[in-house]
Image (tube, rainbow, N blue to C red):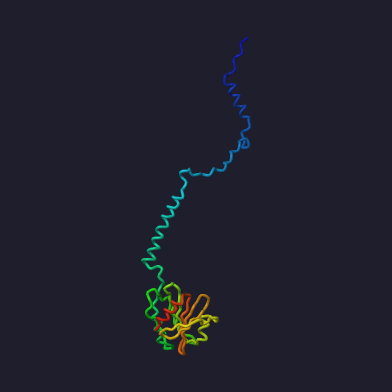
Length: 215
């Protein structure tokens, strides 16, 4: 009787792949889900990296100093605060040539007075010359000359509630001082040919200076 011959060495190895071949392939359900990323911690500057109040003040100074220099140059060199002035001469000449009423012209006002506007308009009831000034206190003043009847002109320029409170004598005659609209004072010179009104929210001294300069 012949002894049994040993099994081939590769028989066991070949059996294992066959067993593995019958196993089910892995599914997605078997894979564990990846953990979701949690909230990231805020990035904080190190103690030495935080800006100190001194650093912030220096940064503001770098911005503000050029602005201050530009404003100074604008105001002092370019006269940025100086009111825009116009030449009223052509408008005054138009009113004089109309010969509708005697026209008064300011003479000798200082350099701190500025003419800001000038208009001459005709209407059915008369013509009106208006010249706007900026006085030394930077307040606006209107010089109104018109042959519109005073009973119509004064309520329009001073309001219906205007009341006379005094007089001012100048080379052109005696002016009456009025309380006009709230905060306004006015000087009025009236005769048969025309009415002259100086009105503005300013000191009475400035109104009287303009009235005294009219010729």
